[in-house]
Image (cartoon, rainbow, N blue to C red):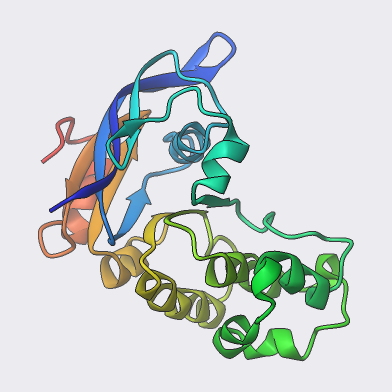
Amino acid sequence: MTIELSLQDVRTGYGAVEVLHGVSLDVPTGSLTALLGPNGAGKTTLMSAVAGLLPLRSGQILWSGRDVVGTPPDDLARAGMMLIPERRGIFATLSVRDNLAVFAGQRGDVSVALEAFPVLGQRLTQLAGSLSGGEQQMLAMSRALLGHPRLLLLDEISLGLAPLVVGQLYEALPVIRAQGTTVLVVEQDVSQALRSADRVLCLLEGRAVLSGTPAELTPERIERAYFGLTRSAS
């Protein structure tokens, strides 16, 4: 098993507040890895640190074996790392068609996005900022379908959305992975994570407390981790 992304004893935070307290975890190449944890566990902080948006206080972040700590976010993006924040990965004042054109770049072909999310084809002239929450998330995920990233970081793609919409978003992930993309997704729905992911990681209070395959990590074990009843990764 090769490792696409490895965090080693990562510590970071905001101002005087440390949020991640020595997090170490691995994301296998080509996998769909779900990052679980309650509110305040440090999931979004971790994603920001990986994407180069938040400096580390100590530790290493290895991407394909190379230490990328201190690498500017735009350099990481050009190298194939894509972060899609929850409902914020779009250009709100542009039409859906123009968003797709930007995402597609010189390739120009947006058919794969419209096949994955047919509703976007009915909204091409509509401003992206006026779409429903679920449609905005579909448009944001079109970036990954059209941009062919090496590493995709998805932050809270299902938060506040109807189960039907969440199902449509997750149905697009195999298409993205088929392009050779490794996916790390922040998810609060334990059942969804266990259904979709190859590997599950759990954070609690800024520490990695659990890791394994869905077969190894039952909802009961994850629930115990959420409530702080286990302190060592297994």
